[in-house]
Image 1 (cartoon, helix red, strand yellow):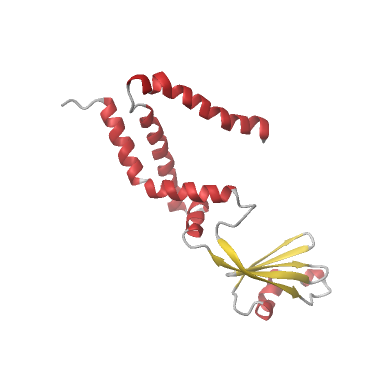
Image 2: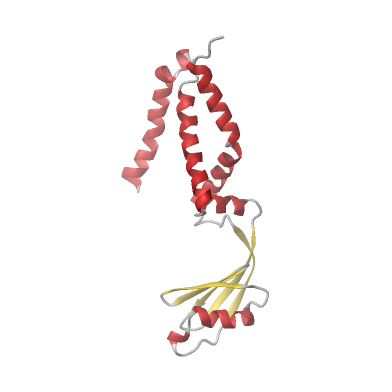
Length: 185
């Protein structure tokens, strides 16, 4: 039996899709959740929120990451200090299982204790990681997705082929991203 181009397209399309199925699902789910990161966190959920009142130093230059690292155990004893960020008059202190927002003028704020969302957090990390080995694997995955798309164009024959029908759906599918790109953004 002669192996046709359609045969090879089906074989490559199918086997690459099987190989990358888990990553396709993980990237799809985490991508959807990351699209809605303004509405909810794909990594963690809030367990409790408590008000805090800190007696901050009068000298604003003393309010540094080192200051919060040294005093963190007084307002979050069960949490490990990770980082401090400042934006205008607001300070943000990050812990391994909490974060605190503080008004740097008054010392008033709140600490929010969080727990990770199992599996979804790991998928989001995969989607956003900058590990060089993972980036190479993701690049291979991106190339495989292109191969899956291209081979998929040439699987069907007859009235459902890419030449007869597929190109119309492709053009319609391309219209939406261009509308968002040029007119809505």
